[in-house]
Length: 459
Image 1 (cartoon, one colour):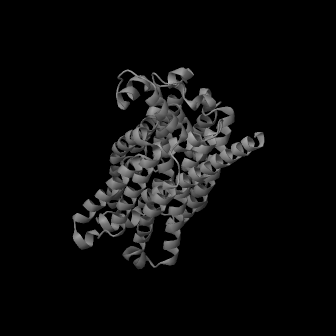
Image 2 (cartoon, rainbow, N blue to C red):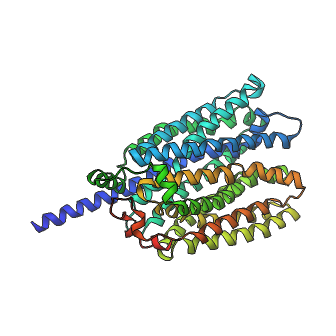
Image 3 (cartoon, rainbow, N blue to C red):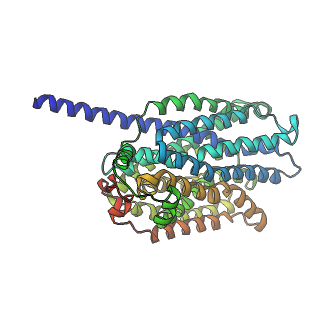
């Protein structure tokens, strides 16, 4: 009898381990596919500006393209709110399946869109519509996918599991850069301008069936299932809506989340979207070299994010996050000054290499942003703050930095943007204080499984 019980326990443990692997794989691959489509637009900004926003001044065309890139981020907070509320009510899995399907629709529209030369002003308007669809879909991805990962994590390993959210984003930037490099090398300039730029968007349509299949094979988060079961079994007085509860009971969690993402997203979008276009337009460096640097250091960031997430499980989230922000800001200042003074590919690569500290910042970020919220408002809180910060400090980063350089005449002006973002991130982490564990549980429910994570109190 005891042997059978041991075997049953072993089978259950094996099934749990297999589902954890399945969740990590589906979350990482599905999220990477979704972010690949969302970011490749920025990587192809140069050719898109000519095809959809033709103007006598190339800088003006680029500015309009980056404005379209940024406007799409306005849809992200709405998407984050809608999908966050949906995930907190109906489950993480259902929300993730819907989001990846919607992203495929927006991407497909981009892939087959006529240019300005074919249909005139309708072309940039349809381009904007496609970007808004993508933005709405991407808005809920971070909160729901991160919640799914940390809620499946084994005790004491939430930083490690949550880091795969950012691994997927690094892979997306790397895949986008690899695609851009391959098309630039394999096609003539005329062929690339005629049809080559459409290839990543058309291939991106595959995210629909691929992501749907991967995510359908995962179970719902056990922590969320336990939350629903306990909520249903416990008689509770009528309470506030999810949003009302979120803003009235968790203001410091909201502030800390917003500030952390403001810093991380500014670094991310300046490095991955703005810098390659800036190197070509302002410093006259080869686009291929900028894309190659982005590819190499994006892949490096994926490995660093995993290591940083695991380290944060041992020494605490802030002990990893705060030094990463400070070191990156200092290096960005020193290396950008050198690049402006001597615009060479070597100096550009050194500046891009400094973004490996983004991996150290990104690794613990998803765990920090999700575990500080109770499970009943977790996806909504993380999604809403993530997308507000990304809209203000990420989506507009290429536009603002391009404008700063043009308005001031100072090619090193992006330094001030990075300094501001880092200061906001440090301030948010400094003022946050973890609540007593019982504060994290909604009224009428027992404390959440967050207590099993030893680093939660040190976040």
